[in-house]
Image 1 (tube, helix red, strand yellow):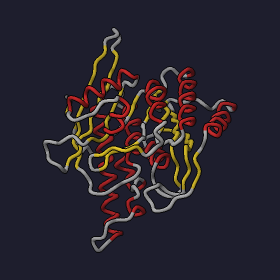
Image 2 (tube, helix red, strand yellow):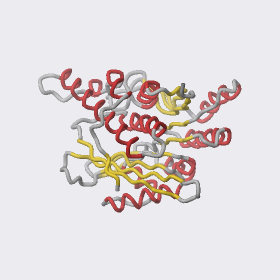
Image 3 (cartoon, rainbow, N blue to C red):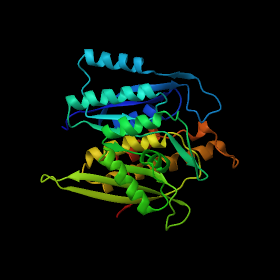
Image 4 (cartoon, helix red, strand yellow):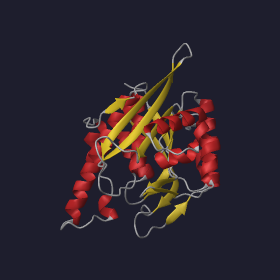
Length: 312
């Protein structure tokens, strides 16, 4: 029997829907991981709805919860996973926790989705306070092992713009130099040879040989776009990349193919169900576009590979 693998997931929580910890917990459990979920915010629903209510955790509250785990000597982890955070002191406290956990377990892997913003119609904008960017650059990324920024976030972190695949590879090298061995740009607005219906994602992984030499594997994936706005896809992506890089530690191509293919199946099921609920050709509402994660259990466990990665 495989040894228990435990993840501390510090992300947002919603009562209704699938973002943050709600998007990450079930897929990771299905894939055999034990999850301890710590909520950075707790909202009634995600902010894509017209209304939401809830609380944002501060660093003192985070420390209190972590202290409880420590007092009981159950703060033993193989992975830390982080996503959406709104408060810079909270984010700095997360780094303190990661450092402490890495001192306990030198093999601990920190997977960070640096959720800061995105591009709409070619224009990028941040949807978290701007004072989080220096904390990510100076404190978070240097202790991270795997990061999953979108193109806009990769540009923010590296201080460089991406207009071509070559520039994206340079940006990933800049991010490697900051700390992480695995960098996946989860979405970009780079043109695809397959047409405007396709979205390009890029990945780069550095592995160290016993003799100290470093090998870098780079991959590109072209995914069919789905014409809808989903919330929680980044959280689901980061969780599944954690799982599949654990199962295929030195094969970024296979880990990304399984991650992206599972995403494809979840999104196709979600849009199909949403359109059926909306009926009459109406545009589905946010509540109808909540990710169908539970219904996609088999696709998460054993995804049929529908997106092939190209090794660059």
